Length: 455
Ligand SMILES: *Cc1c(COP(=O)(O)O)cnc(C)c1O
Image (cartoon, rainbow, N blue to C red; front, side):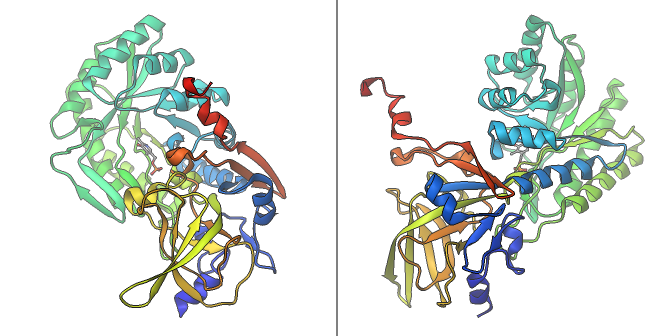
């Protein structure tokens, strides 16, 4: 019964409001408003499916991160991880609020450049950056290149020489810790594609090679331990390992690490019960750990950098869908109601890809009809095309109703595809009663334009 009550009033209600954007409100008629704009009007103007971003929410999180990690003298740059969602507008918002941007491809770099983000505010990642990507980054003056392999040391050094710059580099360390939500595992053999192994001594060897190349300047170490992390335990182990490598580099090579970049991964609430540590609390814990570990071994405390993605944009975004068909399917016991929407795995692959869970609500009207167990599915030709596996939605849900899925700001539009030749949905931002197109909807013509035989 408790669950049912929450489902009826799940938007901007105390019980569940932390999964919805900051400005989400229910009007007396039951319509959801974001940034003081009603979703019915937005759906009429821009169509569905539609990604909506609460601009105030994105800016507030960016500011929160910038301040939390700059709170004392060891705060370095916080970079927004562009892969979570990137457009020119978003890049400008986060940079205006004090963040830099972490890009991992030439495409992400191109958007950041077009947004006018200064080179020194950019950091480039990637386990297989192409020569063109490295050249573009160095020509633009990207502030940090994160070295991910021995091959890359030689490649970046050669291109930096050609471009006639000294590239500032970090070495990505695989610390043997992997964290997800509130669990972390120490992986002994570090069997994954990113970074250089701490355990095998590869990080130290990389620094040794970098220090001999005049076109490279070693700035510090990088570690990224996972995603959707709710507490600081994984960061604690990672920080301790990074500090011990930094100590060993200092001790044996006399080289100081000026900067630690501890990556991203700070989690957000998708479900009402999710309870991630606050930005401030996480920052305080992590800083304390780094300071303690550095003091313990007697090395200077480096400046600390981070790369949150999801935590900046995840909660700010929602997906608005129109209900198309409602079908009851008999189960061994009881029945399940399949609610089909006008999008699906092409705009949200996370449920199919890793069993992600979401909160969903009827947002175009009020219903006093008791909730029933539903499965929200898409329109694609796959039975795995599920948006929300188990959802409590009002029993009178009907074609034409609008439903919204919360916390789709990260890794949904950025992972969207054209599966079934479905054009990707637009992104609209809302603020103070105004809406603005951030990315337009793709058209069939956009898709056909790729096909030279389509004439
Ligand atoms: C994905 C990623 C991030 C951002 O992760 P979030 O979970 O969105 O915060 C940051 N840094 C690196 C290297 C990444 O791969």
